[in-house]
Every structure is written in C-alpha cells, then in structure tokens.
Image (cartoon, rainbow, N blue to C red):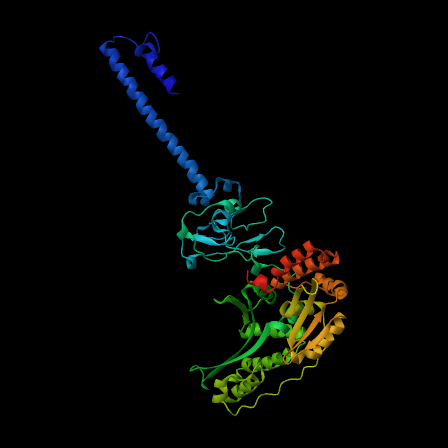
Amino acid sequence: MLLLINHFVLLNLDAPSPWGIYFQDSATPQMEGLIELHDNIMYYLVIVLFAVGWILFSIVWNYIGTKSPEMWSGKSLLSIWVLTLPNYGELLKLLIPSISRKTNCGWSNYSGKVISQEICENKMDNRVSKSIVRLIPAIVKEQRVDGNGLVENSTNLRCTLSDFERNSNINIQSNRVFKRFYSSIITNKPDFIHTESPIGPWFLTGFSDGEGSFIIYIQKTNNTKIGWASWVAFEINLDGKDLSILKDIKSYLRVGKINQKSNGTCVYYVRALGEIATLIDHFDKYPLITKKRADYLLFKSAYEIIKNKQHLTEEGFNKILALRASINKGLPEALKEAFPNITPAERPIVKNENIPDPNWISGFTTAEGNFLVRILDKPKTQVILRFKLTQHIRDEELFSLLTDYLDCGKIYVDERSVSLIVTKFSDLSEKIVPLFDKYPVQGLKRLNYADFVKVWQLMKNRLHLTTDGVKLIRKIKSGMNFGRILK
C-alpha cells in the first residue's frame, strides 16, 4: 500500500521515472522541496496506519474479553469454543473460576471453586438458574458465572466452568482463596453424590429409624412468665461427605434447614411448628418400626402441648419436663437439679411389626449398614464378603424379623448392640445383591456397595483364587469404608 502511495506522489511530480528521483546526481530547489514533502507524507501515513490497526486490534480483543473473561486472567484461547449459556437474573456480578488442576496443584482443588471474586459475596442478587447436567438425572440450581458455558460431550465440568480451564495455570499464589461451591452437584466430590432415584417415604422412615433424633429442648429465659422456654426439633447429624442425603431429604419433605459445621459434619433440622406438622404427618403415615417410635410419640405429645401454647403455663411446662425425662437419655443434670421432683412420663410400648417395605431396608442400611471385605492370609489367603446391620440391643426382636424377611444371616448380640451378619456367598449372590441393586442405598455408602459388588464379581469368576485377583481385591478394599472417608 505504501509503495502505491509513493508511486502516486512521484507521478504527480512529473518525475521522469518513478524511482529515478532518488538517484539523480542533482536536483532543482523545487524538486528538493517536493521530495521532502513526499517523505513527510509517508512518515505520517505510517503512524496513522499503525494507530488504526492498534484501535481495531483493541476493539476485537475487548469484544473477545467480554465474551470470555477468563482470557484476561491468563486462560487459554481455546475457551472461546465454549458454548456460552444465558444468565438469569438482574444483578449478576463477575465471578471468575480459576483452577490450576494437574499442572500446578495436583488436583488439590475441586472443580467449581471460585477463587477470584470481584464483589463482596453478600451483595450478589438473583443467584438462581437451572440446567440439566449430562448423565446425571437431575435439574440443579447453580450460581451463574460470567462467561460460563459447556462444551459438547464434556461431562467432567459443570456449567460454571469453561471446559478448557482444566489446563490453565495460576501464576499468582496468593489468589488461591477458596470461596464456596456455587453448584448443587459437584460430580468429582463424594459428598455431592446424587441419588439415581429420589428418596421415597419408606426410605426416609428407615433412614430416620437409624439416624433420626426426636428432641425436646428446654432452656432458661427471661422472655416468658415461667422463666423457661421449650420447643421440639427433629435432627439428623451426618458426616459432611453424606451431605447429599440431607439435601435429598430436605427436597422430599420441603421443610427444614441444613447446617454445615466447622468440624466437617452437617445437620438437617426441623424446628418451626408449621414444619414439625409436616414431619408428624409423614411419620403417622409411614411409622417408625424400631424402638425409636416411642421417642417419636413422646415428641409428638410435646408438640401438641407447645402448639396449644400450654407450655407457657406452669402445668403445661411440667408436662413438657416429664416428657423430656423419658425421651432419649432423660433430663440433663442441670434440669434434674432445677426440678428434682419431676416424674418421667410413661414411655410408650412399641410392638415390633413386620418389615413394611424393601425401601425401609434400603434407608435403614444407608444409616446402619456396612458392606465389608475381609482378607485372611493364614493359613492360606481367603477373601470373605460380609453384609452387616447393627442397632441398639433394645431392637433385638426387630432384627429377628429382619432375618426372617431377608431369609438369610445370623444374629449376634453383645451387652449394648445387636447385629445381623450375612457372609454366605450364595445368600449374598441370591438375596443381598439383588435387593440393593433394585433398592439402592444412598450417599457415601453407595460407593462402598459398588466396591463390594466389584469384589463379589471377582469372586464369582473365581479370580480371588489367583495372585493378581487378590492383589486387585486388596486395592479395592483399601478404598472402602474408613479408607474412603480418610481420603
């Protein structure tokens, strides 16, 4: 282009040759002035063209940056290939997920953690949107992130991450600040294992028979005339890695709250009177069958007193105290000292009934069951599979009914507990595995069951009799139960 402009200027100078003017031995003053003008024009044209090019480059770069903000933080240009999803809401603020996976951290960070945030978290509004995750049968809510997207056929990352961020680096060490998860489901973290089938009523009852607690709280206060406050609560406390179970229970009941504690545990609780009514409606329709049902009935009586505001009177409060003295472990020492003359209410007699539904067994096993692999090395290597259920000794009669229902297993009793154990390989193959394949356990225990089945399949094919087979079984066993929890 510059050569064409040069040629045009020289032609207008009536030069004998387009290039000859630079090689003439002598020139008139007029010709020298024209040459100087020509040089100045060329100089300024170069500057103008460079400026125009820089402006065009900046416009294109800024446009790409608005579509893919991760480019500004050193992310790969391949992220442009991500299919951007529409945001939902009015005041979505910029959150930049920035993960240094294999190249920098050895996968010490989980997918989906936001470590660069450009606005105070409590100022963010409209955190809701929904999407369907491939291969996971669930619609989930998630915090949208500016520039989020999902690459076709990619199932490793959620919509809040660009797919190629797995290969990006974090050069600034101080930026590695974990904020929180913004997706309901993180596929590579065990405490976000989603259930294949939604929790049903009998599963919930069975799980509550094992892990649920019916509590009557009494506390000194200046806000009532009698100087004491009382309320009821239903709680389930679990390890944080089983958070998914509590989320499913909350989703099923549509009441209650979940609190994640600093010690790694989490609790689902229902305390509001209106929500307690929903809970009571459930357990009246799908009753508990362990001795815990007696706690529930005492709990329900206390609820009725509080619902009618009788607990605000001295007579009603004394009834609450009597119920509290019979539930769980009875009155704590502080209440015994304050009310030494309280007579515990009569504890309801619970008669053991038949197992109501196989989903009850699934729920109860999720709470109290274990799938175990044992390897004996002497006198010769031997692999033993064991399915085990354990409960308080007071439910010994119920475990006899369980044995009859499953048509397998043996009962073992000690001073405090009763256990049902199945080790016979044919019983495991014909009764236990088919049962839990059809009515699966949930949460972290579902992974233990999957490993249990892997070993069962190896034994079924007689590979446990080979050196390589035993080596593989040892590897599977090392990642089960406590081995999985400690990871």
